[in-house]
Length: 306
Image (cartoon, rainbow, N blue to C red; front, top):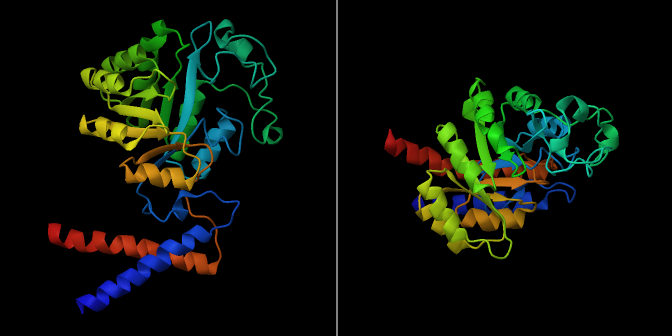
């Protein structure tokens, strides 16, 4: 009986794992992975779902919600009159019809600019530079985590005001703070100890991953959010130090599988989706078997822990 059950489960595994890889070529879904179990990773849309709408705009954040992302990442900085707004660059040049640094604009003047760049920008003629409040409202509407990157260009004197603004929100348990600025990270953790704070690290020459781990531990940060250029030894170093690991920017299933095997469960992406592709009937049957295959061990494991 046990042998027959083992053979049956093996068939389910082969059938359920092979078919998702047959998904349509124009669909990039982490669900099609042969390695990553269904629902086992948290996926965050980079600058909103920037593959389908202009980055860091309300349409991009709404698309992230519609596609079922766990979180929507944004970049925040400050205007000349101290308002926190969403913009990746220090200047407005690349994404709008304006010129100059964000910090040189008042909020009122910034709102007069038009977003004129980004994916499918023609479909969103009224898009403007959003405020932090507008972004948070969209995240709340869709039940998404707000993954907030504080840009190094932001006014450090406004961090207390930022913490106050976030603390006033009823959904503050859905916030995650990330930043490349070590001083900003340490400051925000002190101001909001209950909020997860991650130190961002890229892959430029000279960046010291080990030193970042030590800094995070010393300042009681939640973890490290690192570029997908670091190897398993660095991931394990962080995890063994008690830190959580996030990785950016993962835009293909193969890379996601690689980091999943390393123990990473949080991915930031421009292009992958967290949901099932539409698929044909045969593929949908395969995904159903895949779900069943992953649920059986969970079911029997639960029987022994009740």
